[in-house]
Every structure is written in C-alpha cells, then in structure tokens.
Length: 112
Length: 114
Image (cartoon, rainbow over all chains, first blue to last red; front, side, top):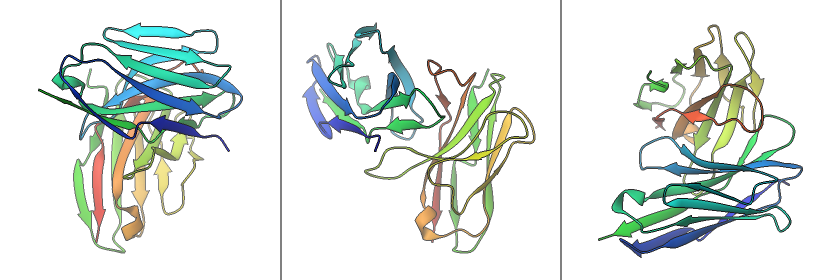
C-alpha cells in the first residue's frame, strides 16, 4: 500500500527558532515529492517539489531534502515567523496514475 | 487572475438533501480534482477530470457525482447527503498530467450534514 507518514503530528516552537519536519513514504514507483503549506481555513499551497534526482530544494526560509534511497524527506524552516503557523503536508506522486498520496500533515504553531 | 474559486464557502444540509458545489478556474488548466479533508486524515481524492467532458473516479467516489461541461468549471454533486459526508471539500486544478506539475487548490467548502 502506498503510504506517506509524517512526524511529528504537531509542533510548537518559539519565534525565531528553526525546526525540521519529517516525511517517510512507501509510494512506488516514485515520481516526485511535494511539500505544501496549508493555513487554517485555506487550501494547500505548494512550497517545493523534488524529483528522484534532486536531493535538496529551497524556497526562501524553507529547505526540503529528499533521500530517495531511504524514502525520506524533511522540511527545514529557518528563523521561524508567526506566519509559519500552519499545517505542512507531504505529498508523493507515483510514476503512473493520477492520484497523489497525501500525508496527514504536521501542525506547526510558532509562538511569540 | 482569481486562480481556483469555490462556491459556496459554507453550507449546512439535512440528511437526504441534495446540493452542488461549484469549482471554477481561470488558468486554462486541463485537469481538475475534487478532494475531501477530514480531521486526522490526509486529503482524499473523490473524482477528477482530465479535460472538458471527461470525469473519473478517485479514491472515495461513493455518494458523489461530478460533471465537467466547461473546461473552467468542475461541479461536485451530492444527491442524498449523509452525515458521513460532513467534511471540508477542496477543488484543485493542474495544467497538465505530467508528474512535475503542481496542483493549485481552492479555498475550500465546509459542509455540515445534520
């Protein structure tokens, strides 16, 4: 079964601190992995996308890494801001078909 | 350029009532999708469309119907609503099917079935 597991389920950090979110997957054959940010009451918005050959990609203070051998990805947030409070969702695509495999998300709360 | 829009934003139904959720995109995208998001679960695909006049079932299609009469619109219908259909519904679209493409999501419709 194609699965995407994210950890931790929730996280609270102080403003200005760094944090790392994890994503493990069993989706096969692998095509690409995306990280989405979902603010409360809004739809998900894409942060990064990585294919098999890419092992790191940055988008401002967000840096995603991918280890296709161990089927693990991480999202590192640097110098967190209050606006980073959101749910971060890992999404993995198979090399065939239309369906995306969504993780349950990590809920991040950044406090002053 | 509004992106992906959904109407209504909120709706309360009684069991057995019917309704239609409307999704519209102005990006000339070929592919459109309907998802539902429930607490503690990832987004799940209900139905999708790969072009005007086409629809296909996703992971959880039972109890829903869809239509794509115009390229820019994708309708999700509930013929006889059930409490199990209480959820937040998201529409998304993408330019092509290619795996590197990104899906753009609407703001969601929060549906409660009593």
